[in-house]
Amino acid sequence: MKKTTQLGFAGILPLVVGKGLSLVITLLPITGWMLLPVNAVLFFLWFRLAYRLFDEHKNLFIQSFLMCAFGLLMLLLLLFQEFVAGHWRLNILSTSCQLYFLPGLSLMSFVLSPFLFGAKEAVRFWPLFLCEWIILFILCLIGGFMKRRDRF
Image (cartoon, rainbow, N blue to C red; front, side, top):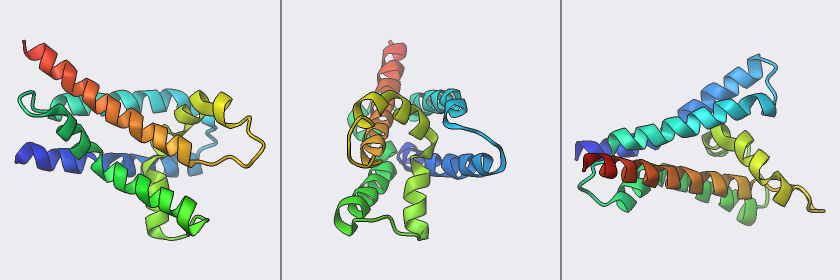
């Protein structure tokens, strides 16, 4: 039960990191290229956190889902704003959703730019957010597999 609670609270960490990163970006003249190493380190830390928190005797898929459930909620809220509301709202919930995905946004945009930014229409952020959530989920699974492998 303790590990389950820790997994749930660990899922909120990208929001906290995103808020901190937002403050740093606001105060310092940092561009997207400078954030690529920071994004890579943050993804590695997410993997390490999953490795440390996962229980190798329990279902890795369920543990990964628990760790990424808050991110899935943020993603669903963003998709609702994008497709149903048709625009981004300027409130705390909308800002929180965007801050959650800020830690990996530069890396996702760098990787996906050849596929997304050649389009004639305006660039949408939802594919970046979706890919980032999938990467976070996969990193959780890999962390769990590595922990299970190291046990034997």
